[in-house]
Image 1 (tube, rainbow, N blue to C red):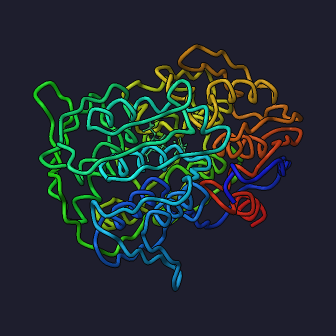
Image 2 (cartoon, rainbow, N blue to C red):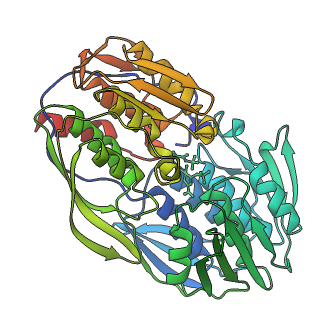
Length: 446
Ligand SMILES: O=C(O)C1=C[C@@H](OP(=O)(O)O)[C@@H](O)[C@H](O)C1
Ligand SMILES: C=C(OP(=O)(O)O)C(=O)O
């Protein structure tokens, strides 16, 4: 069920001190890669097969929207078959596309619709309706798409695309893989070459997967160090088999849980370790984490490894600004790790966190203070004085604010508090990590 349909059935849950975390856990398929696998398979004429797809609410929103535009998507024998229509062949949806809680679904699908001669209305839950869409509306309008949005460039909005768009060059104003990907998706059905210049590199799953689907795409560094992605339009993608790695952003919660609970040692197999995604793992290592990658290998163009992590005393760290894009979704759980480290950790340059599923700077500062951590909030970051490995007091109820990553971060923090804490609503977790609470409890009970 998407959050926009859910009503008010909040599910509070309590997390408290218990035993060390031990054993292995399965981590769901990468959410970013899953969205892209569905969309590129939709743009390839013929049947593709996806193994390991995320089955959380966000990726289901993408699948249902593509289904409403004529793409055949069915779960068979533990994987997903996608009957793609080819670039340019999406059909006019008969109903509004419900994006639930998912920014990636919204922005990437807006890109796809922009170069199809159809009109689509995008709706979403309360959290998604607060998030800025101007960052895609403005460049897609340059391609000729017509967008009627709610105040402030927000959802609900209706986007009318066109066929025969002429490709152009874009320079990203915000470091955003979603904007980059929206423009490349639009470029698939434009004539000529789409060029996207990124001043700061962001996750590159779109580039890797488009290449694997047979697109004519090139990436390279420009003289000033900026990154340029060029994609030839009117692309004919070839259907293929896609294997989706386990999501490093989901693995992050289990990893930090094992690091902060004394005596823990866990193993997570087949996790994506794409360099544009592992800023948190590098930062944790710099803090002293015993975190190793075994059996590094390639899975359909994406690097993966088995991750072994053991409880470790953590030292405070200043997160270097250049690492921020590679750990953009991991700041909530990084702040939890910092709250148990020795010394003051600082991270700045995080203004984007204020426009995610919640204002993640404010939500984390409030919740961490409520459980007894010392936190100083800045407009674009946080400073946290850690406990030096001691448990925090806990004993409070914290708000997940329609944000899966806030909910999971406090669930983990509760494992090393003196008094159990309550997360007021765990339902948002279903968007990216169905079964998270059971997975965490099984590791702690092993
Ligand atoms: O492209 C993607 O799949 C994503 C990019 C990031 O968003 P931005 O591009 O808006 O930073 C990230 O926060 C989001 O969870 C997924
Ligand atoms: C920001 C996130 O996702 P999205 O933008 O797709 O809602 C996230 O998963 O942390």
